[in-house]
Length: 90
Image 1 (cartoon, rainbow, N blue to C red):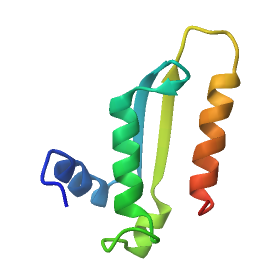
Image 2 (image 1 turned 30 degrees about the vertical axis):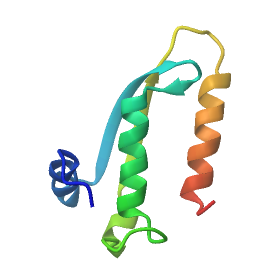
Image 3 (image 1 turned 90 degrees about the horizontal axis):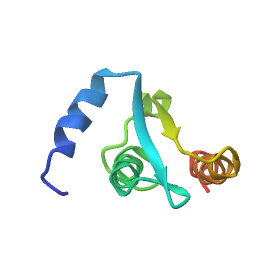
């Protein structure tokens, strides 16, 4: 376990129904900081990886708000594809 500020977020998420995370898109991906947060959340709340998993956590939602300059939706389609795969257990 990494003892850092994520512990505060984990504690807050115990009471929340959802987390809204916003990030700009750089080079076709969300920012590195946002990616680290989503990776850490997955490691914490996935029944396959976390000893902290609780059945109630499976109902929590992650809402990603992404902004980018391009007019094409291909960037969001790619990010959506990967997160849908993760949500379905890969």
